[in-house]
Length: 171
Image 1 (cartoon, rainbow, N blue to C red):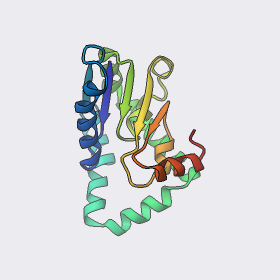
Image 2: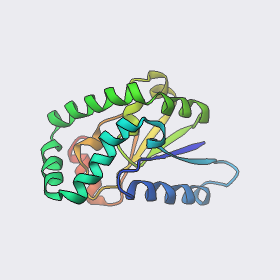
Image 3: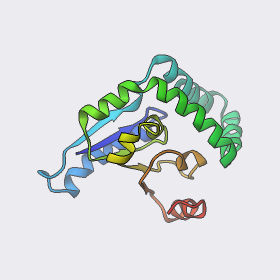
Image 4: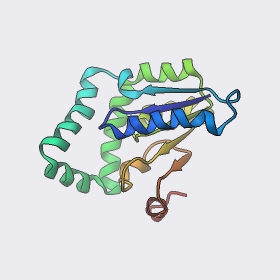
C-alpha cells in the first residue's frame, strides 16, 4: 500500500501528489499496489492550519519580499532546527487524527510532497520503525526544512537539486 500525503501550501504539493497517484499504478503491476492520496491539512485543527498555511499563502501573495526574507533567514541549520522543533511540538499535539489515519490505512510506504507531515510522526517511534517514508522535493531549491523529518528516501526532479542535497549531507 502506497500512501501519498500532500499539504495544501500553494497548489504544487497537491498537484504533485495527484500526479504521483495517477502514475503509480502504471509503474507497478495494477494488482500489486494500492494507492491512496490524503491531504495532511484535513487532519489538523483550524488554528494550526491558519498558523502554518493561511499565513504562508498571505505572505507569498501579499508581501513576497518579506516571504523571501523569511525563506533566506530560515535556510540555516540552527534556525531551521529551532523552527522545526516548534512546528513538531504543534503537530505532535495536533496531529493525532493524522497518525490515527495512518494507522487505519496501514501503508507500506508513505510518500510526502511537503516537509511538514513527516514531522507529525517523528515522535511516534512505532511509525518510524515500521513504515518507510520518502519525500518528493517539489521546490526549485531545497530549503533546509526538507532535511528535517524522518525520510528514508528523497526524490528530486533535477540533478542540480540532488547535488544541493548531497552537498548538505543527504545521501
